[in-house]
Image 1 (tube, rainbow, N blue to C red):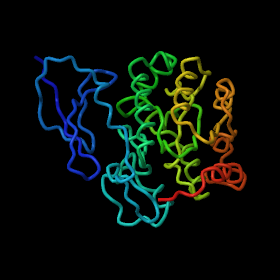
Image 2 (image 1 turned 60 degrees about the vertical axis):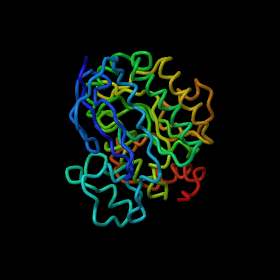
Image 3 (image 1 turned 90 degrees about the horizontal axis):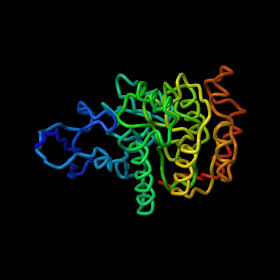
Length: 305
């Protein structure tokens, strides 16, 4: 007989609770409860426990979001709800210590795929299955040096994968998680200089970055952010991810993404990686970057909710 901790996960302001053992998917250790999870008891079981069986809470339903000052927020990401958000500038300025690490996005490692309808949910379940495969056999899809480093720098349970509205029809493919951004938080193009520049640029163009789908060629953070290429495993996972999404348009963000998408045979539009601008001292969207990234707005259209 084995005793394991049990949590009740409260979702979306409803009275639906999901009972699941709160165990690490990678290290096999018991983790402390996170925000939104309430450790209530232990349960006894004679069945083998597979942590992958309890990762089905990755969908973020549009009804869980709240619109404040023209910006959609995820209340479960916030330690406290801000009294006022005038626009996206206030949203991206929220202080982590006060509001939480994931305050400036609607996503977190347990809620990665935004769904609006049944077709979105079907796609999200397929993507969830791919993520399970990555967790079950990470060295099939990540170089060992990348994977080991990712385990060192990540401050969340699991591995980086992707995040976004699966029905947007627009996919941004980046290169790899950054050490201070996705590698640390699990959310693509978030928190580090490149990620926040991308988000500022898109918001300036009236595109909410959270309503696109964003992923990377390489899913684990390379040591010291030095990407030394990718292999067949990374290409296989990316191809299956894109086939599940069936996007109208794909943007390659950086040369690594360009090279990978060419090898896979997908049509795409190339855009300079935000890091290209950051290395030149640019921290705010300039005219050149806005002109280049306006191509995303031309195909995304207007968010209708």
